[in-house]
Length: 115
Image 1: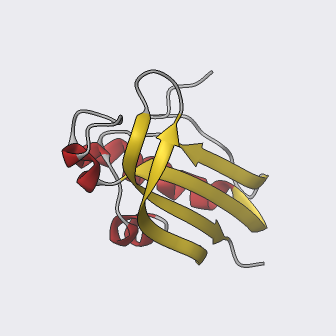
Image 2: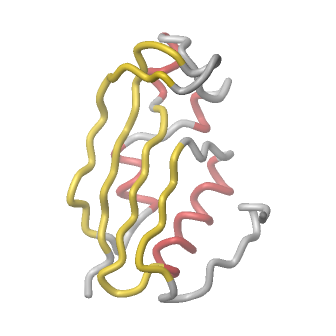
Image 3: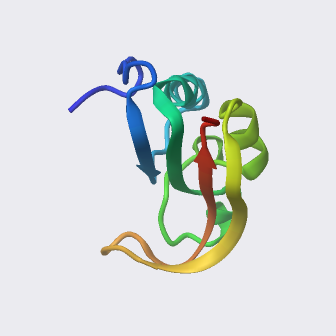
């Protein structure tokens, strides 16, 4: 268990990192994403799914602030140094418990650190 605001994942340590619904205030998220890029080993993979700001109109889950949501453009900026194998904003049905049900606006990313 760690506070993502100051967690140190190390350098070139992880073969894969998964981030699902990790919605943080923008300054904390940007700093964490920089650390994630550094923490991936060469050839390492990042898998990410998060709500996009379009989710605010759908009301099927997510944080109460669009600023805490992510976009493909923002992820490209925050995850500099990774090569995106998939980066797409889309709508999909979510069925993940009582407060995350229904049509949802998400961004999905698969990105690899060059070897």
